[in-house]
Image (cartoon, rainbow over all chains, first blue to last red; front, side, top):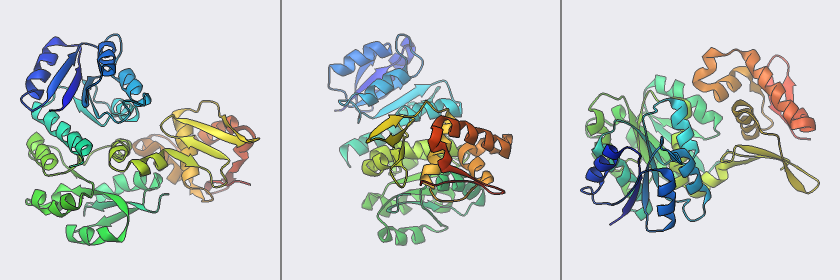
Length: 125
Length: 236
């Protein structure tokens, strides 16, 4: 079973993501901000990440940049979640190294489908 | 340009070709256009690596079954279409059928390129790495697209250039992707400003080229003015 790191500062969204991802076949590791998520990532055992962009202490873009510049995590598949739907915001996300980008409110099945695409690539199926 | 990489675009829609063709060309990615899936599939063995962009309309109602040959050969493909027809359910159907993404037809050219680069990082990492660093023909200048930085080579070492603005950096990348070629102002405008090209005039290109030349110092002479045409990048 693959482990998904979830970084989201909104408590109700954290609960929703857990409800979507676990029945979808993933083990979830839930964090309330980017700093906690980074510390958890360093502990190991994470296969995919779903990161909110707007978070206190360390936002999703800064966390993503740390992930992409750290040799241990450059290949970690990452989906960004955000309320910001402007082209410039999405460009920033992709240029920071995101694999995919979903705007809120999002469809739980869509998130699962996009995670499955990333899973296909990392498992080479 | 990386000759062994090719984008195969399946669409009969001229509006898509008009919107996405120029940014793909400016990126230096060879692009073949097909109106029928069978023609695209027949072309697959003729070139090395690539990525297929498939118009959902051109694939028809039996689309997910039709793309099975691509799935079986593990050739990367992305489907695009108009949002609203089937909504999220249709998008999920394509992702489950093996598409690496579903892109809305109205997607901005800049965002299309950003998404394609993200896919290439995963699907074709060797090409992705090669595409990230642009080197001038004589190896005197380079740009790293990931770092958004540029360097000049001299006295046996690479010296970083002053930080460039987004437009200056994209201009320099365009010149490095098209060395020794006469680039018309109109082409530069569409390649660098893309959807915003209509909001600026050709003199804006001149202003940004001048600013770039200043930052390049003596190396700025490599960007030559072609009067009545535009510019060309030439190394001595």
